[in-house]
Length: 201
Ligand code: SF4
Image (cartoon, rainbow, N blue to C red):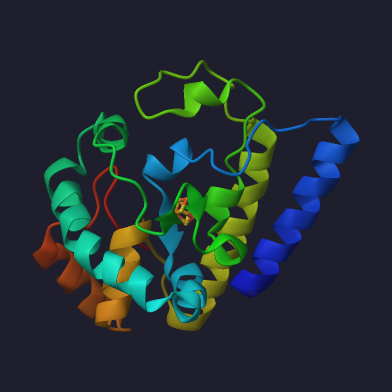
């Protein structure tokens, strides 16, 4: 399965699930609080996204990538890291005027995060109640992610997963293919492993 197929199949499955259950998410254009959160991406999804980036988006990633790597280096073992990250209130560099600038090519992790609750509770400073984000769409996205991780393992012999903007930055700069070289680079950057750091498995 390719990332493009995984994106398409998830969209179809989500539409079917929401229609069958009569669930109407409150997510709408211009509502972008979840784009301030810690979003993970696999190498395969990143590579599928790269050709669709505009020069301005690439420029913003090249600027933001090193800052995110520093944040990860300092906080990857901190259990409160995702909320600290959220509270830094710096949006995904692909967010443009409150809209996703790569909407048709956005990662599975972005597609699976839906709510039918009060959108104000998605805001970085809010503390959403349990269940605020719909669990089934998230599980459906997670299953597709796992299928892509398997596909990546078949192609490269391992899977690489990391924070969205910094992984796109590393891919733009040119990431080695060999597992040992990737691990050495991520170790040198101080972002390998830990609770929130890059995973090479
Ligand atoms: S890729 Fe798009 S949807 Fe995902 S966090 Fe970035 S701006 Fe938001």
